[in-house]
Image 1 (cartoon, helix red, strand yellow):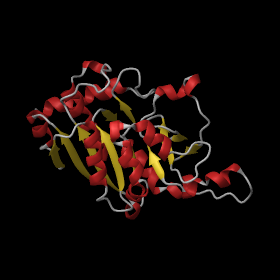
Image 2: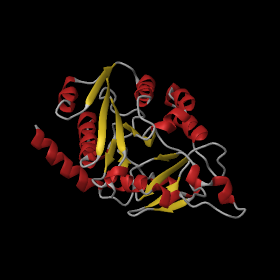
Image 3: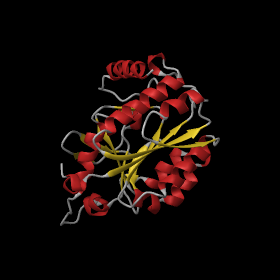
Image 4: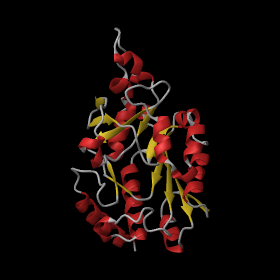
Length: 270
């Protein structure tokens, strides 16, 4: 991989250990919130090693225990007492400092990452022109879509409900070196995009922070069958992260083994 083309990742890790679960959904592996945050962050941190990155922790009412944990890593920490909506706004404010070609990762604190997640992401980004660069020469639906010119947004998990009959949608499919990608039309507030994409859609992002409205964000931001100024959002198959809520975890990945390995590493840090 050409090092000159390697992206810089600005990681905005929003975390709060006051609330166990926003929607009271049960956590897998019997995890308490603080251990869950540590495991998810450690999986992210380890996956980033060897790549160009900056990590900014947005610490909302964070406990002394977790403040001390994050202090062990080369990160920037901003402490606040925001609540969910304002912490999202704070993440967008920090994202405004990104360079146009930076890849900003808005990351909530309950997503577990595979060790090769940034290998897969970086390969897609570096080889983006080969993956999305087809320019049609005849009248077709592809002319209206023209993925080579769309702002790209990446949602790293692969939610299993997308494969249930009532939620299935027509999707564009792509292939990169390490996996397939499918177009999706809805995300949470965990996604990657370029700094220039943040600026392009800044008003939509700002409005979506009210009531943490990811449905509004998705509806306004992502194209479906038609685009008309909207972005292309894709998710890997199989997923390279998972939301740690029971019933929505990315399928086809041995998350139990990854969890167990990270638990051992956490103990070695104590």
